[in-house]
Amino acid sequence: MIKIGVVNIDVSHPRSFASILHKENRARYSAIYNDGFRTDEEIEEFMREFNLEKRYGNVEELAKVVDIVFIQGCNWDRHLELAEPAIKLGKPVFIDKPIVGNLADCIKLENLVKKGAVILGSSSVRYAEEFVNAKRVIEENEEEIISVFGTAGVDEFNYGVHIMEGIQGFLGSGAYSVKFIGSTKINDNIIEQYFVRWKDGKTVIYQTQTPQWQPFDVIVTTTKNIHHFRVDSAKIYKAMLDKICDFMERGIPLAKITDLTETIRIYLAGKVSKENEGKEIKLTELKVDDSGYDGAIFEAEYAAKNDKEKL
Image 1 (cartoon, helix red, strand yellow):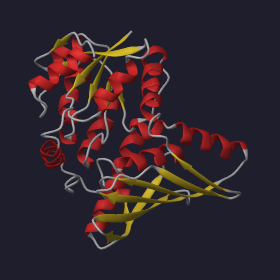
Image 2 (cartoon, one colour):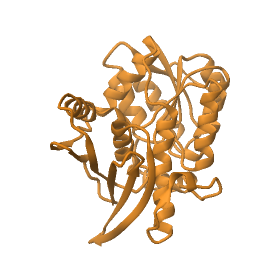
Image 3 (cartoon, one colour):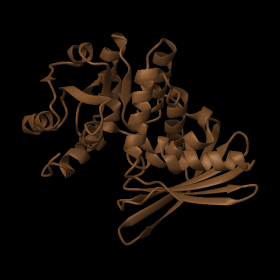
């Protein structure tokens, strides 16, 4: 049985993940450290529901008694800070999406892995069976991918990152540049589109819709066909958790850290492009002092929104 220590249960994922894991006999949440906005009452309720053994006073104490640490706070700017005590102890760390929100943290993650850290992540859409099946069919038919269009809702980055995680995992590394295409507002919905160019000529358009939830729909154009599929969001958590368990039990790798950080770089380049009237931005042109996405602001907004909602 794989013992998971969870750091912060701000979002819905810990409860959803724990529910899935407790139906099987491979892994379970066993310990918690929390300094997020959830109340002591909510922490105690979570511990009772999923039979956690203990709440710890710091991440280092937690990491010592578990096999893997899950970082699941909604302030992505603190993800590295909270992960580092576990990394120093040599424990694998899963960091929930978005893994980080700026270029400096992308570089720090990559350097930590170069030094031996095991960092897993990040969006469950990356591991969706629909992407896996589409890739298999395309390869079997000897088709060459030309372009991909994908949709996501809720917001530009925190939730929007799902769709490009899936697409980046599907295409593999090699994103070259991003261009903000434009936006429109219909009623209270803001719809934005971004154009991503891969080094080998493939192109991607990803669309976000705020604040409306949207399914993850994907259209893939190839040299021989057009494939359309919708990611079944009811299955994606289990797909990723199975991958994590496979890694812990048999060492089967998940996505490389450079793939995870390339996805973040795509969003950062899109943000810079939007701020510069749609100028095409190469990923190599990003600067460490660019503002990125502010995790503290998102955490405050998310906490205020969820203040009267139970975890």
